[in-house]
Image 1 (cartoon, rainbow, N blue to C red):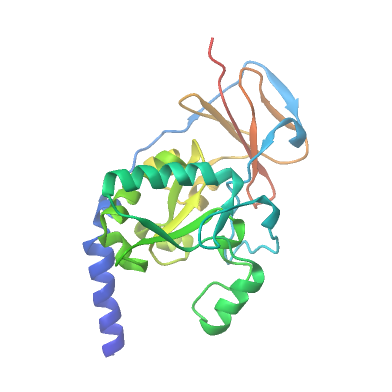
Image 2 (cartoon, rainbow, N blue to C red):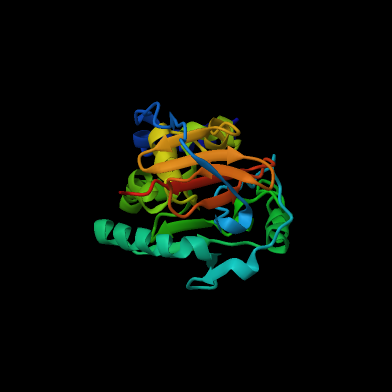
Length: 264
């Protein structure tokens, strides 16, 4: 009973005292507008730039994939996907300028074997294959004196909650999303999804599961200058009036395609 009480009090302190900003933040609505293209063209995966930033890795969507060949090295034996490294650097630079706190890595890419070693000593950790760290799209961070849930007590933790999306990252396991992610609040866990997805998710207060469900198959949506579509198969239809088309697997048997509308 005493242990449960202490756990409850810690949750009140770290989550509800220091994490209230994001919990109470107003959710914007109707940002994704249905879009009807005038002209379509057929594309294959080879016609697009592959950027698998929207894959799901979780207990519901485990992976057996290793992505070591797609990694960029960071300091202290950490690594992250090459598609995310420049965004991560710009995020850290902006945060350290604003907060004057040095950001440190606690965990980034993990192999299946390394996750197995963690799970072997900590049964509360994700099982091998069920950790987002396998994707190479994650950085767990801290600042001096503020690690794990204490991270949200730091200037950097609060800044990240408000600004990470501006650099293509989201707080993957927010306080308000625990029921949908099935993972407890982790203010230190940054996940790269890229533009425009991070901004949409932040403004709509969607976790990745919500976002992928919102993009109905074979429909087109517009967000600002972007066109987005969820499709299946090996040949895709996409508007002609766009720039380079990017594509990501969605781990649900399909793909998300997106691009900016060409400017006149």
